[in-house]
Image (cartoon, rainbow over all chains, first blue to last red; front, side):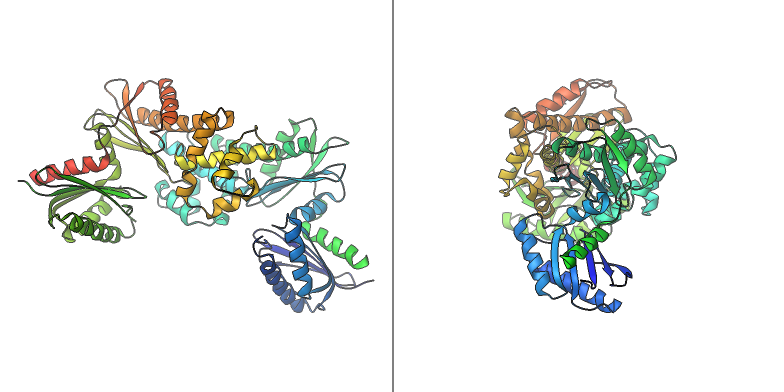
Amino acid sequence: MSGWLAGLDGGGTRSTLVVAAPDGRRWRCEGPAGLVDPRAPEAAAHQLATWIRTALADLGAPIPLAALCAGLAGVGHEAERRRVEVALAAAGVAERVEVVTDGWIALEGALGPEPGVLLVAGTGSVAYGRDARGRVARCGGWGLTIGDEGSAYWVAREGWRAALRAHDGRGPATVLGEALRAAVELPDLAAAPSWIGRASKREVAALAPVVVRVAAAGDAVADAVLTAAAAELALHAQALGQRLDWDREPVPVAVVGGFGTQPEVRQRLSACLSRLGPPAFALVEPRADAASAALERARRLAEG
Amino acid sequence: MSGWLAGLDGGGTRSTLVVAAPDGRRWRCEGPAGLVDPRAPEAAAHQLATWIRTALADLGAPIPLAALCAGLAGVGHEAERRRVEVALAAAGVAERVEVVTDGWIALEGALGPEPGVLLVAGTGSVAYGRDARGRVARCGGWGLTIGDEGSAYWVAREGWRAALRAHDGRGPATVLGEALRAAVELPDLAAAPSWIGRASKREVAALAPVVVRVAAAGDAVADAVLTAAAAELALHAQALGQRLDWDREPVPVAVVGGFGTQPEVRQRLSACLSRLGPPAFALVEPRADAASAALERARRLAEG
């Protein structure tokens, strides 16, 4: 059987849809968050279906598609996953619909069927592991206020903290304060609390490159923030390493996300991982992205 | 000259007004925040004047009073301080009006005219110091997201973080997660991020006593959070100790605020302070509260 297929990677801040025509042409488009509120799973399904319909119409793709696989955030419980799946199918965007967790397609994309650990480090952070027995576990991803250690948001916030500690004489001197202040055009460092009160979490996270730049210029405090971030990310892998069963070492670790894939972060992470074990870990390149993994699963769904 | 007087302690979350009649009777009432938005100082003055008028009418006090001294948050710059003072005087609640910073009246209340350090540890945290030459300095108080280390909010947030790290296997085991979960009636620990997303900062801070209780019951992780909070508070004193000039030691340190004055916190703080120096520090009892210090200043204003 052949037909039009789509894979959806629904993240907490935005979604990616990959559409494939039977002749092999592919399109990729970005859309709204694919985060399911467990109190109203059908609402998320409805919103996604509306967006998918528009995207398919723009491409001239037929509706319904032969198959759609959607990896979504917030469907960790089977009951919610099933409700979203039923609602998406009822919306008529595809003849066959499957809903899986965003973690599953992320793992599948990055590592294929192999055991390993996936570190996601963008605005937030989370890690997934799949062991030799096929068991999947998650670590971190508890939100930016009480979790998501080692993420871009975390790095920017720790950068501000270090700057203010230096200003007070509670911590070592750093040029972070001046760099962060200039980046958001504040009149002085004392305006930082009110800026952070107004800024969105993505605006805060967008300052992580300032910390990277200041560290690269030789600032020891900024360097320490980045090294702490890498250690936090590595700790996710270590915890998963101990919670799952591995039949061989080193355990592959793939990193995705706009922050974790920067060379300065990757380098530090590699150093942190090399000090861990057992099990030992080794950084590997991700095979594909999550939306492509969802598309691959849609293909199997259409063929099954 | 005698007459009716009032002192106002305008904090970031609520205000306290102390009113004194010429015959020595005194009343104390609580009202809305006395935080001045630097972009609109007159708006804060107007809101405070309205509240003060109502409070005075309830007491049967004459309007205008002979004098009012208001210590307000957010008037660190002279231009804003002056604008609020002019607007409060124009509102006609008192014949003589003086506006000073909340830090000044807090210091004056806790230490009188003596040099020393005042640690404020409630929902948030901040420290003020006044040295032998009369110079005043501030340390911390940068807001709950990037500052206010050692406050009730900070302790509760670190408690959640430690609980989630334990849950993931990223940190040592603790019963903090179960205690915090039960305190806010969550179905499981995975509901913590959405709870913290909905909760106000005061609701988060209200969990600090849970951390204190779990620590008292022997939980090493909760104990470490409290010890870290005390160390953070002591660091404020240490920084002020180095930024100001002292003509004698030990430098007195007064602690005010609902969190810092708890025996379990005070004990740990005392231990942290005893390891600092030079200069050496010693905990002392606050002489009076900030609103009483403002009232005393109003008295001098009426007599001057």
